[in-house]
Image 1 (cartoon, rainbow, N blue to C red):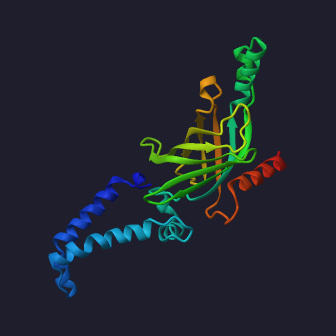
Image 2 (cartoon, rainbow, N blue to C red):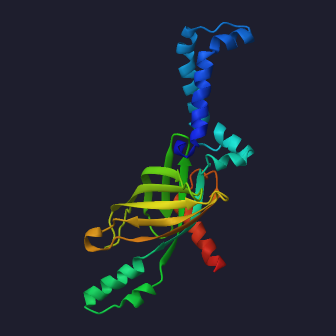
Image 3 (spheres, rainbow, N blue to C red):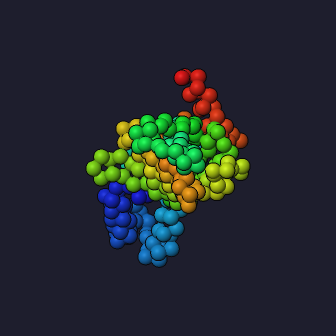
Length: 252
């Protein structure tokens, strides 16, 4: 997540460290103690690294930086706390692909307008984001299958024009009991956009390489909202997704 920090923050921090190193003896005299070059060389690096690791490294609900961020929400404008469980829906183009597959098997003609009017397949999903200054991990589960995915690599970046934050990641999904049109394991990618005015809502797109050799790779849309900043212990993402599906069906 460090890539979201403003460069002036990083530059100011480096300048402060350099200034403290250069004038440490003068600062020590003002405070009434002696600071030698040997002290700086021995203690400054581990103190700085220890502070960064101890303050910004943990990802738990009571991690020091997350506590400060909850007390001062404005800090999310520079480094958002995206930790927690996000619930929402995925809209897949699988019905369109299936229609083309059925047409090919039946040697029937399908026009473009018919494909364009095909409704997406909507499913509830749950996503868990685990993040700190040095770490970013995304996991997801669906309500309809045992499939579960985890990010292989993930990177946030800020759009220089709109200020929106993008969370882009490549993931691997496993399906213990895949359908005949599915794979036991496949890779995919997603790009989520988070509005800087509301860090609890995200939307974006995804695409997969599932059975791409025979043209069955899918794509679709994602719409998510953060349900909680603290995942319930022992509760799976599929359970979260199933609850979200029940809620959506009750509201419809």
